[in-house]
Length: 293
Image 1 (tube, rainbow, N blue to C red):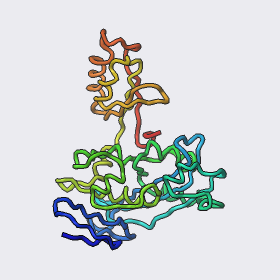
Image 2 (image 1 turned 45 degrees about the vertical axis):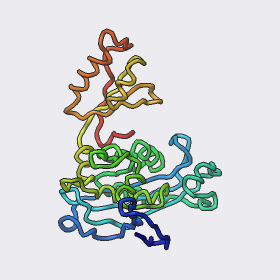
Image 3 (image 1 turned 180 degrees about the vertical axis):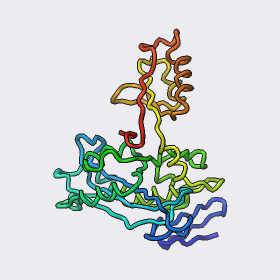
């Protein structure tokens, strides 16, 4: 069989060897799904930056797009997109230009509209990024009046594996969902995020609904303080991740699962023969306003 793509390329292959991808174009207005115009508002964001550390780097591109959703977590309307670039005042590292496609000329004299961006972020019930542990720190460093908002994360608070996806990288999720986009640009990643939140599992439940349920309540950051090097594989297998800044293994645990997690740690990490240098983990209670900081 042959397939003519939108750019005019012909693909020849057997049916079972072909996956047709469509360009992602989120149009402003009603999605045609859900019950009328949803009463709730979320806002999706993405940033491009000069590096990985928000304390020393600069935001060079910020994209924001609001969406409305109903009580079933169905996106009913998508607002217009907003995007700003900002001149960091120094030449871009070559690797950032290679990653984003942005050049020093693209950014000369550009500046984020701080008032407009802050107003948009504060107009919604929550802010969502695909890696909020990264994006939140950059956004709050650049827009101090947007600090303390409710945040969710479409990467960590949706079980993509249970939904039949491999991995959690946004562009790969989108491809598996039948679309492609111009990755590593803020506005394209925002649209990809919103599209993935619309994904329905086998029972018809949206990823947005799942994320809101997981992200709306309090939870605990459990840090295995004093854990011996010999139990690192146990911790990794349990879902703990190494925090290089604090030099400790940690994970987030739902409120209802805290006691069970403490029992597991007592039996595997802090038992008499486990060589731990502490007697119990450190616990930090987090809410949507304090999560991902």
